[in-house]
Length: 302
Ligand SMILES: NC(=O)c1ccc[n+]([C@@H]2O[C@H](COP(=O)([O-])OP(=O)(O)OC[C@H]3O[C@@H](n4cnc5c(N)ncnc54)[C@H](OP(=O)(O)O)[C@@H]3O)[C@@H](O)[C@H]2O)c1
Image (cartoon, rainbow, N blue to C red; front, side, top):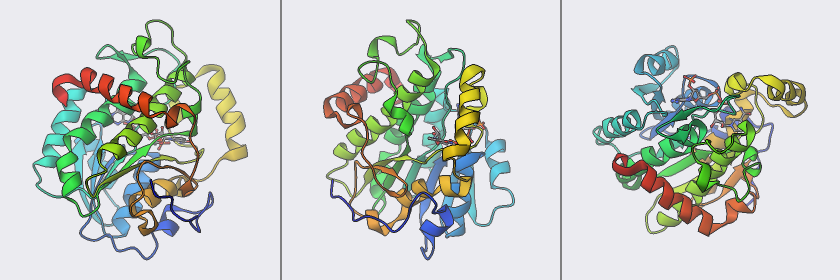
């Protein structure tokens, strides 16, 4: 990875500020989770700068409602991330549009549901946050590579530092052998980062790149299922470190569009600058193993 010079933006910068002056007309940008929080703000701002935004939500109605009233060009699509058949058909629908994809922003996510949730035999955060995006991006590699300089932006989190022992507990991806809401959230966000790094390595011979992002701490709908003591802690500590949604969406919009990041791939960004991720996140062997296991789990959906 070539290290970019320090940018003039910081934790107080907004998505509008980091994209000011950019003309994104002619660019196609896919964003998951556009009906709420950081995804909605990213969609609004990137469309404002001229991009055609393909906005994904659980249902096409939800995606359509999110685009309603915003200025710009949108194509709403359905993508229910906890169902890989929905992810695959969303990818096929987008591939059939026959357009290059300049950005795939893997933004949608859930955080720390109080009770263990499972689907497809997997713990639901690993499935929704990581495996679904793994399938989506892999099925869209052709349109990504056909863009002049396609970018994948993976929403990770500082939470990636709090994981089960070893980072990814490959022997307990279902959660059957024990479930900790925050550690499983951290595991899924570490998986986002490792996926981005291994993808960056695999994209080396193409014009495309992949970078991961920590957006900061922002009050959105993300903590809605945490419940119990965890929600009390989040409510108590958030005001100390919190930023607005406009500021929260800045780093991912910066990663998606900044000319300062041309040629940068495999980076972890926070506050619109390169940051240092955890030891596990910097482990290429772990990234390779996660890729291999994810490919096996995805099976025919890849
Ligand atoms: N907010 C923070 O402080 C913070 C910090 C670090 C990282 N992040 C990351 O930032 C990203 C955006 O989070 P946010 O704060 O904007 O949260 P949010 O307001 O809750 O938005 C999350 C989005 O993901 C969608 N989503 C969740 N499960 C889905 C599924 N199964 N299928 C399709 N879409 C699904 C949600 O749709 P529904 O409304 O239909 O559920 C919503 O559009 C997440 O990846 C999160 O991990 C956030």
